[in-house]
Length: 239
Image (cartoon, rainbow, N blue to C red; front, side, top):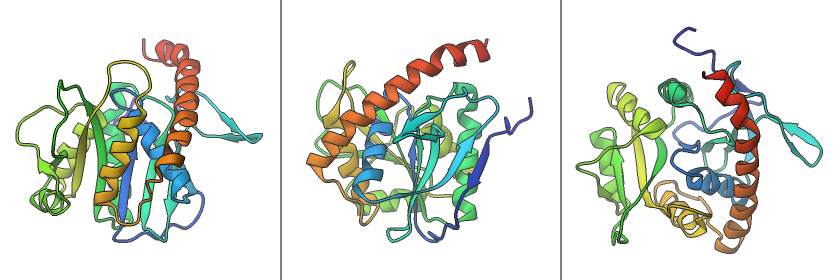
């Protein structure tokens, strides 16, 4: 298997969001990141702009209103200059670095100014100030300007960690928001908090709380169903 793992990004319409933002919506630890970005797509009027696929992804189709959908898609709002990489699949860890590189290559191709990711952390107490990590000095400056505390010491795994490392090497601005999440069960509060944090970094993002909670519940159900259906396929593929 080659280094690219044959992950393909196919745009299905022209995309013009130069100078804008890319939001990473892949599930990492738990589903909060995926739920928050899925809700964001519905709240802020995004349109389907492309799909992400690979021969080594579990073959799953998401049926919505009778229409088949790829489980990993790109949604775009050209008015806000924002794209979201949205996924109902939890990628195997062997794909995290490759997916991060693909994401940053796509951001560079479209001349985007910032890539925004997120990761759940388990803490006993609520942080008074929102915390995030940045890949470059300019990314850290953007965080401070938005009112975030910049993480000085810690470990960030998965696609968010790979985005930070690759962003550092390629001098691309990447930020990873750290949010508190519960150990078990749905965490709609975390989804709301994460959406509000993203709104501080991405101008124009809408976080309608009532709509967000409703969409989050639906999104969580869809994502968990997809994860369950894909689990036995993924397990057999990666043995």
